[in-house]
Length: 493
Image (cartoon, rainbow, N blue to C red; front, top):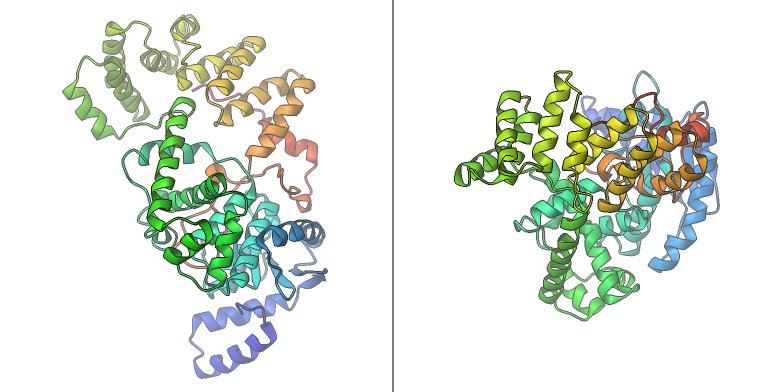
């Protein structure tokens, strides 16, 4: 099954079922083969694409076109071309079972793999985007998996997990998401990072879902670091070393000309430098509540700590405590942005809007804006139909927090509302570059295996490949959804 040799697999599975009719994996795998028997196959020069002809015929055509488009590019830079045609299977709902259920059974014989695409080396399975409640960028998924197909065969399956994921995510070509930046800002200074001795555990046995995210994030950053320091051929040279069956401590010196210890020191310095840049351009993540409480007890006259704890109480809906702490911060520093934000939110909660906008305008520091205050003020201006001022404020957010595409989405909403197509068009192109079809870049693909945290997706414009043309949605309506034209006003917090 993993090799895509399904005729031979059926014969072996039927014999196994006669020996043990209670084996769930065997029974499920035979059911998968029965479903696949109803599928059609689209054959191209380098691929076999199997699909449900009732639902995914158009998708299969576009998928074939896109795979053939990216295939020579990927093979060229990796320096390898698989000897046979690669099998891609797209699963849709059948026999009262979802496409995701069939996809999971195809890969491991059991339901509920927590991904929507997986690679076994010579074949790839994925869920049809037409069978998902929330659609996803299928082009990104198949490109990610095709990278796995090539480098797994190139190295005779000797490539370590972290490097095959590094290459697959790096080659997707999407910007790093804001929640990864926040994770780096929080974890790197605290020393909560993986190294090459531990990163594989982040993929196969993560302690938390954030560890899993951190493993993907760091893997991609390993690839970026190698290209930045050792040149554009560094990744291909390391692939060649793994193809020669070298382990990582031996492969890195041969491919990059430095010891593994020196490589790790340079990577750690790269992360430190990156985090130093992010602290000036990324919204700071909230501190844990207990840490904030202790910090205020230790320094009760610090307005920053008082405001941060007030905001924590606000998020917990402990409004009296939030108001008291915000007031204490404002007594010490009357125009403190974070404290003003908390006070404004509390006033709006009780319907007291009078004076809120002037209070926010007075507290706003354009040179170093507090992101929630700026977003709240801009949202209130939008609701009041003061569109030009809303544009100014959202543009300020884009400039001060350039790695957060949320500001671009909110600005696009204003231009969509006012039918300012000239200013809207470049924003939609920018959103397409940022939107990889998944919130927060939660990795939704990867080589098969259990233990992956959950996936959720959303519709997206795919800059590196076509969006889901099989879903029956017009491109204009899709662009409107990406810009946020859903009949709702922008978030005002």
